[in-house]
Structure formats: C-alpha cells, structure tokens
Image (cartoon, rainbow, N blue to C red; front, top):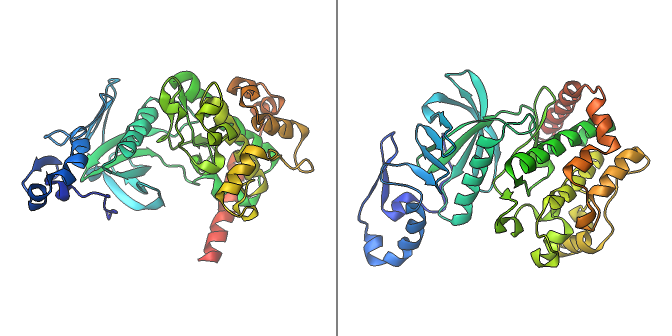
Length: 370
C-alpha cells in the first residue's frame, strides 16, 4: 500500500523498524550528534508512546502492535495488514487516508483508516480519543469497530464499511422530509448514546461525519476531536469552525458552562438545514471572508428551514436547535420527545430505497464531471 510520508520520518530520529514485527531500534546519526536539540524534542514525544519492542502505548488506555490492539478495558482485537486486500481509497483527511479493504479471514469488506504517526501531541491524542470511543461504542447509530494495528510509523484501524459514504454526497439529490426526520433521529440517538453511556461530546457534527450504508442505516463517525464532558479539553476550540455554535466562536469565557452538548445541538441544527436545502446555510459565497461568516453566526439571525417546504414540526425542531441562547437549547432527550422525532420513530419510511436512489444520482453526477 502506498502511503503519504509522515511529517517527521523515523530515520530522521535515528529510529528503524526491523522486519514485519515492527520492532524498533535506535542508531546514531550524524544529525543527532551535530544538533541533538533538533531531534530531542520530537523524539521525546515519540518515546513516550513507542517502547523498544515496537508496541505503541497510549496513556494506559491501549497498546497497539503489528498484530492488533489490547485495550485497558480488557478487550483485544487481533488484526494485521497481512490479512487485508486493499480495494481502493475512500477518502483523504488531514492526517491520512481511509481505504476500502477486504478482510480475508472473515470475508468482510471494511474501511481501514490509516493515520500517519505525526510527532505532535494533538495528533496522538486524536488517535487514542477515536480508538477509545470506537471500541467502547456499541450502538446501531455508531460505526462498528473491528480492530487496530501499528505498522511502519502508521496506526491503522478498521471499521464498518458504509457503502454509500457520507451524507454530503447524497443530499444534492433532495431529501424528503420523512427521510430527513429519520436521519435526524439516528443522529440524535447516536449523540445521546455518546453522552449518556460514554460521557462524550462529539464536537464535530456535520454531514461529512454522518455515514449511510446500502440498507439506509445512518451512523456517526469520526471521534478524533471528541471530548469527555468532565475535562477541560471540552472547552478547547476544535472541530470545524463553520459548524461551531456562537458560544464556541466567542470563546469559553463567554458563558458559565464552556462546551456542553448544547454546542453539538447547534451543529445538528445547521446540519439538518444543509441536508434539507442542499448547501451550507452560512455559505461562503455570501461573505467576503471567514471573519464575516463567523460574525454572522455570532451576531446574525439563525438560519431556518424553508417554511414552504417543511412542516411546522420540522421548522420548530430546527429553531430550537439553533437558539442563540445555549442554555435554552434542548437536551437530547428533549429533542427525542419532540413531536417531529416521535413521528420519525414511528413512521414507516423506506430508507433503503431512498439511499439507493440518492447514491445512484451521486454516481451519475460524478461520472458526468469526470
């Protein structure tokens, strides 16, 4: 498999991987003797995580090597690159690539996320955050986790393959309100699970982090910037700025509670509108620069669903999500108790048929543009 090189190569630090086991040895290098201070800082970070046997250890939460991962919770997942047949690339992100792979022992198609082991604290923290959430999350509204391994300066973790990809690929075809309600219900249930069962806030709710499979099932993904509710990390500025709630843009000192689940509720409201109208409600085309855009989010009127196309129930639900006063935004349970969600839970909607048609239109659009 061809990979992008990490921002700092192991050889620059005098570190070499021995064979398929991934064992690590350190050697002298001219660079290190001439300028030890340049290599010392990044190596100190790396050495905190990788031991001499080639195991990658994360803050007592997980130990990963070339053959799998062992979590401090007692769960172990044995999986390795030798078991994978790479079928293609599903997407690329800031730190790496997501591949479509075939797991030969189980004959299951999976998504394999490849993360370059960057030598900075934030990237390493995002890896362990996502692994920690994925292996604990057992919910029909969260992507399944199959295992992780460490090989050649990259961390890999395998997840459920969601055939039709992220929601942003499907909404240009138009989303009927009944389908929009079902999608919203699944997202709220997923967010509620993270909060109630894992004490986690997602912090990056947006269409690209909502996946759909060929059955029409809707699931949350991408937990690298998630945070525990009872830690100061929950007050940092992470996630996509455009989807940030006004209180997050202004800063953690602007309110008594910092980042709570109500900030994710705001992002949910923006996501619903984007999926409904086929574009981000604070579209860049309407602003001279990003500062004007953020100023509109903080000081302008909140966007609304088109009243001529959506029911009063749907419009009211979104309006509650986009209340500028974070303290009066609803909780997840209050959202689920809303009339629109009650209908979504009980209504019989053929999500598989919608997903198949929306994906077919996506393929037709991409073939025309290529």
